[in-house]
Image (tube, rainbow, N blue to C red; front, side):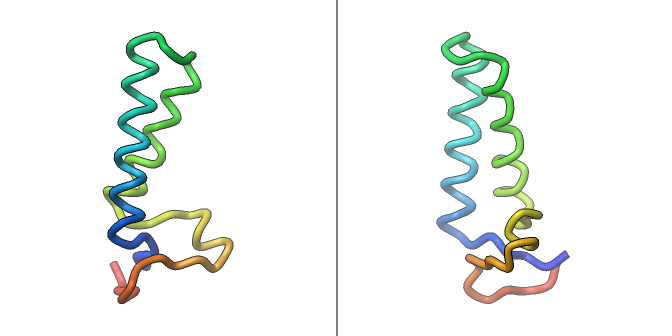
Length: 65
């Protein structure tokens, strides 16, 4: 798959995802907070299926993965 998630985008995805999961674990938000797994995975892998469908690429160099 082609990498389509850039540096700052990756960092934001991981931070937001971890925050959502932490809030879900602490009971601050409901079970829906575990959806934070998705941005964490897309941030770590550097590939976002939604970006592929929409033709978005935040990766500066767009290398093939």
